[in-house]
Each structure stands twice: as structure tokens, then as C-alpha cells.
Length: 146
Image (cartoon, rainbow, N blue to C red):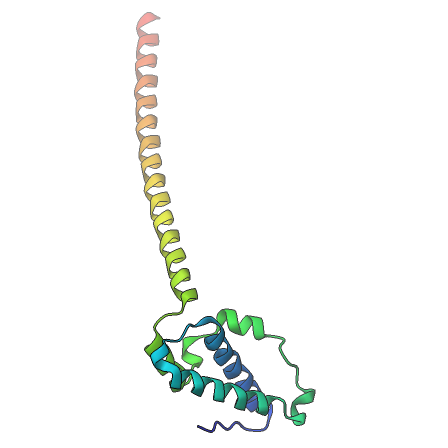
């Protein structure tokens, strides 16, 4: 497979982002041994991208400034069909699974906090009603004693 990009800033940025994605897949994903051909394909793409990015024409371009932002916030809609196919074959990454577990735990904590808040609000309303009743009784008793 041969991947080609335009030799301008847009092509450079696309290649750099695609390389980050391939690097991430190879680094963070343990590929199933039955997918060795996919692993070699990803490695081949990685080397093609590295060769493209090392082109002297791109020495003026800012390199790596938003790599961390891209790797932490990349959007599924930016992925090519190839990357989506890889993700479909391998399933969610370990990082995605961990984030999903953390998200679920946070949702459960938020639901618990919401329930506790409503229970506290109900108790506060009940205590307010009892206070008003006691004030009325106190006022009545004060009026009777005068």
C-alpha cells in the first residue's frame, strides 16, 4: 500500500496526524497474533509516513506543537476508512476501556450525589414544616398564657 499526501502544509499536517495515530495504535494496542499482516501493514505505513515527514521541504513547518493535543483529543470523524477498519477489527483500546470504566464510575457517583441531594432537600422541607408547626403552637400557647 502506498500512501500519498500533497507536498504542502495541509499534506504535512495530515501526514503528521496520521503518523501519530499509527504510532499510537502500534504503541498502545496489543494486536492479536492472527493479525500479523495488519501489524506489518501498520509498520509499513508508519515508515512511509516517517519518510514523507522527513522531507527537507518541511523543515520550516512547526513540528510537534499540538501532538499532545491531537493524541489526547483526536476525533473519530477525522479517521480514515483504514483506521476505522483497524479499530473495528481490534475493538476498543485498553485506554478507551479504562476511560469508559472511569466514566461509568463518575456517572454512578453523580447519580448517587443527585439522589442524596434530593433526599437532603426533602428532609430540609420536612424540618421546615415541623419548625413552622412548632412556631404556630408556640404562638398559640403564648397567646393563651397572656
